[in-house]
Image 1 (tube, rainbow, N blue to C red):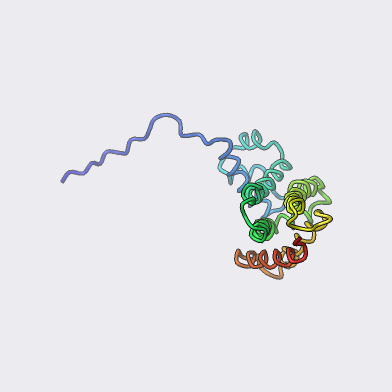
Image 2 (image 1 turned 45 degrees about the vertical axis):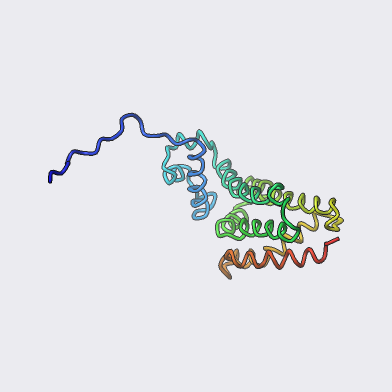
Length: 215
């Protein structure tokens, strides 16, 4: 039997070019790893570009500064939370189920190792780089709080819950859900909770909160 030893013919023309959206995704993942490993000051834009497999020219075209790169990493993490707590997705759920879904999404966002590392980074470097504290507070903490507060406000207006101050109730709910886990993990006293722990915590917090606020 004769074997065909001729080389495989390659397609002619330029290789397929990634879209800017795909390239930004690679940048976000590479930047998140670098920020986690080296902090804000120690992160080098050139290294981020190298790890993302792109040129520095492309990096600076898409993300001109390190501050903007940090903002992009934060926005990417918050974006998934916002999708999970979208009003349309929650509207068909019962009160307990909807609140549990919000709290699980909140726990997944705040209690994973990357977010805990970002918290450490911001606390450790905010005096030298106050802009990263502002970005983290406005783009992450405040945006998440507003989304949770808006849901509580809608339930209160519909007559399902009895809440005089949705902003204060949101603060209490956030603390009840993550404070102990987050503080212990940030201090290196325990590992980040897994999905099962987060789900159990969300169920318990939702029950306690609703028992106190249900109309």
